[in-house]
Length: 234
Image 1 (cartoon, rainbow, N blue to C red):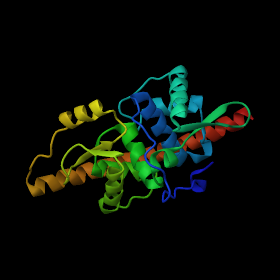
Image 2 (image 1 turned 135 degrees about the vertical axis):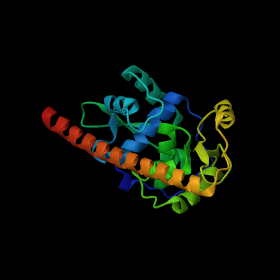
Image 3 (image 1 turned 120 degrees about the horizontal axis):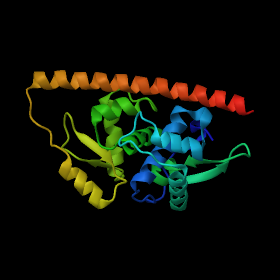
């Protein structure tokens, strides 16, 4: 199933069915959402592809070194929660896809925003906008704000610092103790001269944008590598 065929109409969505996830579950779930959008030709993912996605060096914080046993156990736990389903691929290996739209009650763009937070953790709104835009179009911060408001209303996002320039947010799939610790450890927005703040923000936005462009190129290379691997094994 590709992204275009997913029904993301949530008008009749049931009450909350999602629950907090542990770090491994968050990483695996985020990878499945991300790869569905960035490498659709290779999705759903095999166990090996999911493991590779978890441990890749780009777009991940912190870095992990999961083995296939770790990821299989995590996929099984996500299946039990209803967040992931196993599907049959070409008869050679089981494949996995996320159920974020139903399980979380979100649309495509909201899922992209949450995926970035699941894969990287807390971010400023500027960072989040640039990074999530590699999966779904988010023109600017004004386009991001209504998405933020919706996710906050669904308790799927948490504000770690007060609204305003440089605000830091994260997803709401942490346990209560983890959220409390993040809120305590997140530096609050400091008051700086407007000109200095604007220059710093502009530089940070540019770096994040370049980072997102590099990530997109890496995703395209990954698609080509998957195609070559498929041809060689045929």
